[in-house]
Image (cartoon, rainbow over all chains, first blue to last red; front, side, top):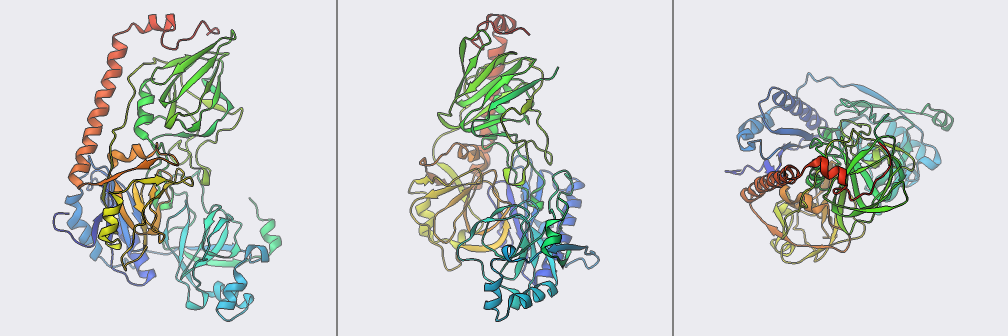
Length: 232
Length: 334
């Protein structure tokens, strides 16, 4: 930038990142949905020529552009103005129910987490199920949703040594966030359960993800028999 | 009668790729696509295919493919060659940068890549299934068509096939722009990165190159940052001080501090690096990055004209009849 503003920075020659001030997770997430929506509208109206795509995170949004088509310097005032906008309180939240089985082999880290928070596995699960969480952002893997924020009695640091394989459907905790792994992948989060549902549908190119930023999660405990008989 | 090739042997680390999958990063979907998108485009040009066409990316050993009921034009690009098994039992070698035709009854065995990454283009571009707007393979999420024995690879009708001088990437140090978390690194780290060669480690893949070299120390800001978008070309440095250079299959978000970003013009070169290769870096400013990109575009346009000249200078029908392009002896009936 000609006169650098700490809130705007380059990510190489074909992307620019707008940083937003940190508040609490839920209002930051709501503000990001608002900003993303506004930018989508501007993009659709042809007001940001050369902009290729947006990547919202919780407290920053990255704009990918074609460096030979775009003039990102000219977007700067509009972006900084947008960053001043508050969250749009009119945005509604969907509720998404996620069935989870906490059976022994699905929850290898449960006893540790319970012990670290001074309780037993059953109580830990009850607390986890009662904690209201919302989709804060998507990223990492297709359909991977960062969910938060967990109360302190449900939090846990990442594993010192990540697992080489987290099975698809793993429900896991790291810090004040939790997540459901849509795919088998390496991972350092604490594994406490597994869901039989699919979080990503490659047949739907406009909305391949089942969870979207802002969705409220309603966990539903299921037993092993229900998990095993869940339709594929 | 359909235009298709049958996979006899998928080779090793070969995948369907096009120019990538865009617009879905917000859902966590990586762009994937060719590690050297320009090289894939160049090979497709040899067959007159549209620039966005899909082809086979060959990282280690190429596939063995059989023609179906109709002839298929093919072209190879990169440091690779192939051998055609003709229906009369004879064999013919084919080299990169010369389009040729595989006739019914014939097979082609594509050898090992001698260096870097190579591509195979087919007439009409590979017509495999689109997943989320692209044919590119991203294995973890089952996107794209997996190459398995006896699977059919749909192609288009064989049109012209051309010959051209090899398209070659520029050489010299890989050029870097300052990364978004440069304040997380000491001045010394920024100096070390460009004064010592870094070697590609063996646990590198299409997601990223793990580099080994002098340790890059973080300032008190540390090795982590708020989770934010990451892109191919960014160099992130975890707490161990060893850089990871992100490539086409890179995850869409990450929380490691990024010291640098490779300029767009040099990204295709990264796709040819293998374990044990070493690379040098050089810091540049944004102006140089943009000028380098414009120069690459011009260079590619000039290269494309040389395909045109090669074709115009020769009577294609005569060439085809004499089998000079493919170097094949009379094969099966068409």
